[in-house]
Image (cartoon, rainbow, N blue to C red; front, side):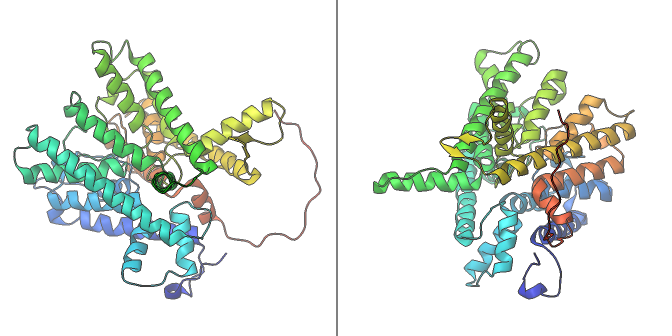
Length: 456
């Protein structure tokens, strides 16, 4: 369907195509700003590809880097990266809509379609109210995060000056909540490996960003119902999202502990093992921050974490991947088929057949993208990285996670461009990507005869 926009009424574009252009333009602007002489520190010489890679990583809130952020960029450059993460995490259309509403402007149907695609929503009704809540959540949660981390950084002596503590707190709060994965500490959160307050606060922000805006809105509605004494029922989406998200967190932490108890966790106390395992499970959903050196993990752990990154965060969140509800739908579909059931039932409801089909499309497309990228990059980088490291970087890019084994700086420009494309697709979503490359042909008015084939 053609997008109706007052300012662009002569442009034949669909909403997904326009969203791609918007993010491409935003990436270009950020790249230009990051290319300015005062954005990098004296003596730092970054190529255009490296600057573009950093910008794409920030806009898509991934966190993969080709250079040390703290050592390469000035406060101005750091500010550009932070602003890019904020725009990419909350959503460019969300920020634009909020400003438009504050100015008293009406939000037309065309712009509502863009918001719907940007926020991965399936209906136009109530979108403006949703955007206001999303923006409000983001500002409030990050403000609390800034106060929390600034207090810890200052009173625990990490940064003796309050201005310095605030500087690091603001960036870290944005990076954690948007699941951006960037850090200006120099070594992610490895320096805070024994500070459980910093780790706990970071995990809370990562979860709040990755759990999905619709879930946060429904939780707020539930709290409101408790205070005003009326009954409120969570939607099936929220029930499935909460269940699968926290189930994966627990199973992820348990799996990491089981594999690494004889590895990086061998010489640690039980509480250290718990926090390392839990933090890695939380951050692998899309966070990108880490408290350990990923290169020290066993190969099975890297593979296991790659699966978690491939699944990613929840829909309508700041994270990427195939999304948690897609994974849940696939598991439920296999279960129902094995039990001989025609439809998928969960929490007393039947899943829509179109949503089931979408889940298989998303999963299949994701697997094709991942496997194809691994194959091409492995051919190009056979001398620079092992297959497992390449697979880890590829899934990290697709899941907009940002965990890395540190091999990307040695990659050729072609491999970096492949990772940039994966980050971009991971941010806008596979369905939006597929719709964007679709020519929007009119549906046929006739049907072909049905004939069965042998499968399985």
